[in-house]
Amino acid sequence: MTEYDDQEFEGKSKTQLKNEMQDLQQLGLKLVGLGPAALAKIPLDGELSDAINLAKRIDRKKEGYRRQLQFIGKLMRTRDVEPIQQALDLLENKHQQATAQFHKLERLRDDIVEQGDSAINQAIELYPDLERQKLRQLSRQAQKEAQQNKPPKSSREIFQYLRQISEQ
Image 1 (cartoon, rainbow, N blue to C red):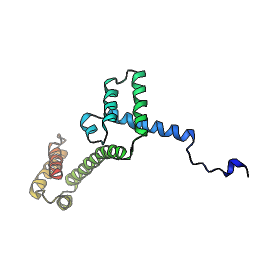
Image 2 (cartoon, one colour):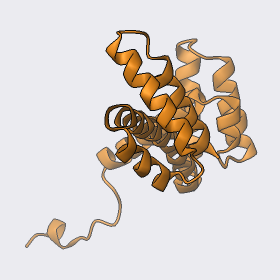
Image 3 (cartoon, rainbow, N blue to C red):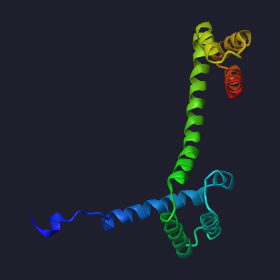
Image 4 (cartoon, rainbow, N blue to C red):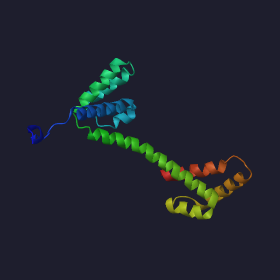
């Protein structure tokens, strides 16, 4: 065994440090890309917030912008970035959840138009505030429009109604 093998590596390699710094710069880039309302939801201290706002002002002026992003990464090295990352993930996840909800309502609408009463019963189980008679009427109209190759006005109304009730 050599002396080199006996040493325990307590520190990180240069590559690991460099990758961590690049990750922090990418996190800073995401923060710079956020709008004011979304940025307000992220837990930032004053110095980091000022650096992000400055980067927004010098946005895309090549060298100055790049140096400002490096500075933001440097500031983030001395801070706990876990709460910042969690808040950013939560913001990104809200968009995915909204998209998933949108697709769920589209499928429910399509089922109501195609299957009629059985799908209406399932929809009422999911959303008890729905009016059965209104859904039946819109479903029949949507089926008639589909048979006559007319624009799907009633189908759109079903979707709007489902979305309105699901948001309550």
